[in-house]
Amino acid sequence: MDMDFTGIIPALPALWNGMVMTLQLMVMGIVGGIVLGTILALMRLSSSKLMSRIAGAYVNYFRSIPLLLVITWFYLAVPFVLRWITGEDTPVGAFTSCVVAFMMFEAAYFCEIVRAGVQAISKGQMGAAQALGMTYGQTMRLIILPQAFRKMTPLLLQQSIILFQDTSLVYTVGLVDFLNSARASGDIIGRSNEFLVFAGVMYFLISFSASWLVKRLQKRITV
Image 1 (tube, rainbow, N blue to C red):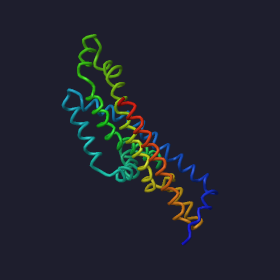
Image 2: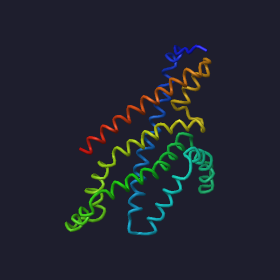
Image 3: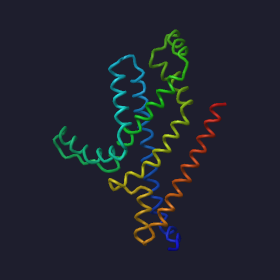
Image 4: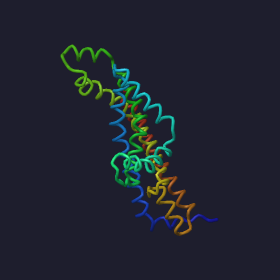
């Protein structure tokens, strides 16, 4: 069967809307995941065994289950939990449930990246800051974390690329991301193969380009 890609041009507005949805999910998942992951990393590095164990259990749990299960769970189970807490029906949209799922899932991976970055900083800097009268929080915020984030930026970006690819899983809850938009547009005109090939090429180009930039950045940071 001959491949005909001419039908993609009229569908570009719908495909762009799908790409916008994908990028929104990715950015919000990254920002929330890094914030929560940083908190979890500080808990794991805390001298409190209880906090360290809680954070460790969280990380081990979310790294042991597939992301598809997390997305489905948040979409189906969270409304029941909210109803049990509030006693009222509280609808949770597919977009919100997916964003929360991405944040909580990615936080487990960002936590380990941040923890490794903090541990890579010389312990002497912590001692020097405390000798100057700085508190633990001030030392982390002003000295340790800025250096750690600089060192772990390539790893954070690499994990972000993985999340960009994983956003395609939102089709399970009916969100129209880029892949789902391409699939639907292809089904309408009977050219599913062409649209799926186009989507695959776009994912490859974006992911490959981003990975190349991450490698360049990593070399610059190393130098």
